[in-house]
Length: 634
Image 1 (cartoon, helix red, strand yellow):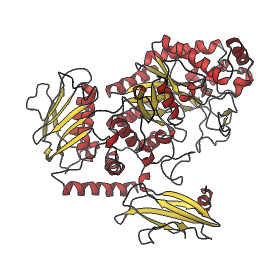
Image 2 (cartoon, helix red, strand yellow; image 1 turned 180 degrees about the horizontal axis):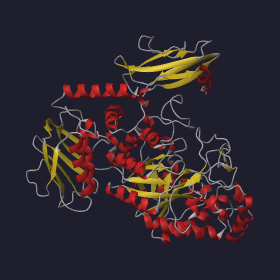
Image 3 (cartoon, rainbow, N blue to C red; image 1 turned 30 degrees about the vertical axis):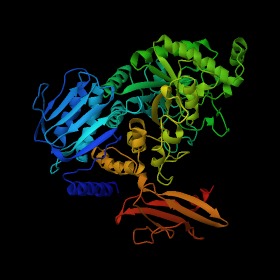
Image 4 (cartoon, rainbow, N blue to C red; image 1 turned 180 degrees about the vertical axis):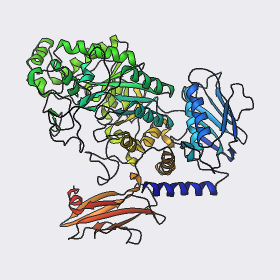
C-alpha cells in the first residue's frame, strides 16, 4: 500500500510539475511571512558555485547545500567565499535588519541567481531549508535522481518566526533511542524550523544519562525486563527474568548530541523528572524512598503500578516518589544537577514535577515530621517545598528551572518557568503572574495520542487528529504575551517502541505545530496546509521518513437511536469518496458510495471502510467488528 501510495503521489506531483513548468508548485512548511511570486523560474546549472561568508555557524549551512545539490541532482558544487559570479549567494547583513531578527531571512530567486540574506547564520540555515522546499521533492533522496528538471520558481520571500521557542519533546525513558536515531530526529526537526529539543531522559521505566558520581543510576536504573504489547497492560514482570532491555547515553554521547543539535540551531533542554516518576532512581538508590526496606523498588516495565482512575491526582500502587524529607535526596540531586548542568549549555533544566502521587508521602513519618517542622499544611505544600529546594540547587549550577504545570500547586518562586500541559489555563495563569511559559497542551500538542481511528493505531487513551493540532495557538487569548516563550509538541513513548514509529507519530502533526509556532497567525489556512502536507508526504517518502496517512481515513462516530445503531463518517480533507461494506467483503469504488449516516444491519458482524480519490484507493482499509463499533456510543 505504501509503494502504491507513493506512486500515486509522485505521479500527481509530476503532473503538477509538467503542467506548470514555468510556475512550479510552492508548498513551504511552515508558511513564510511573505511570498511574492514573480513568474518564471530558475534552473540549477550543472556546475554550481556557492558564495558563502566565513565564520562560526556557517559550516552546517554550506554542508546542507553542498550535500543536497550534489547527491540527488548530481550537480558539481564548489564553495567560494568571494564568488562575485556565484549561482547561490549567502550573505550575513552588515547592518542588522530589525524586522527579521536572529532567525529570519530574505530569499530571492531571479532568472539568473539565488540569494539568501540574514542577520545570523541561523537565518541562513532556515533560508536554505525554504530553498530546498522550493525544489522538487526528489531533493530529499539519498541517491541520484535522473530525469528531474531541477528548477525553482522566481520568488521574493521575507520570513521570520512568530515565537522564539519552537520545540519537540522526545521521551527516551520508556524506550531507548540510539545516538544515530536521535540525530535523525534532529535532522527532521531543522527542516521545519524547530529550535528546541526537549530530551526526557528519566522516568519510572529508565534512567538514560550517565552520572559519574552515581554510577548505579545507569548500572541499575537504565535496564529492565523486556515486555512487548500494550504498554500499561502488561503482566507483572518475572523477577528472575534478565534485565537487558534499555540503554543510556554516556556523557561523551550527550556532548555529541548537544553539539550536533547546536550546529542546527537547536538548543537541547534535559529533563530529570522528580519527585515522581522516579522508580528507576529508587531502583538504583532505594535509600532515597520513604520506605526503602519495602523491597518493591524496581525499574518499571509497563505493567500497572499506578491507579489513574481516581478522578484527580493518581494513587501509587508501588512507591515511585523521592522522599522530600530526606537530606540525602538533595545531596544526590546536587550531584545529578551538577553533572547535567555541565553537559548542557542551555539555560533551563526541566525537572518534571508532574503526576507525583502523594500516596506514600501521606504514610511517611518522615514527611509528617517535615510538615510539622516547616509549618506545611498539605501535600501540595510538601511538593512546593521540594521544588524550591531543587530550584536552589539548579540555580547554584548557573541554570534556571522549568517544570510541568503541577508545580504551580503550593506556589513557585518568581524565577521558575512553566510548561503548561493540562490545557492552556495554567499557562495563562502563570504568564499573568510574570512567569515564563511554554505552551504544550494535550488538546493540541500531545502527539503520542492516536491520530487516526483506533482500528489503525496502537491503543492510547485519547485521540488528536491533524486538523485539531493545526488549531494550536501558542499565545492564547488572555495570556500575557510578554511571558509566553513559545510552544512545543510532546512525544511520550509508552506505545512507541522504535524510531520509525516515533516518526509516524510526529509527522504530519509536527508540520501543524511548526506552522503554528513559526507562521503569522493570520497566514494559517487549513485547506492550504492540508494540500501542502500531501506534497510533503512525497518529500518524506524520498527522505525515507515514516509518517501517518491518517488524514485520508474517515472519522467514525456511532450513535444510537432506540435499538438502532448508526455510523456517521466524515473526512478531514475535501475530495475523498468513502465506500463501506457490512457483509465482510472488501469494498472498492464499485460499492455504493457513502453519502449519509448508515444504520448497522441487525446481523452484521464486521464493517469495512475505505476512501478513494479520483478512482484510486488512498485511505487504509479499515476493518472494525460491529461489537467494537457499538462500544463507541456515548
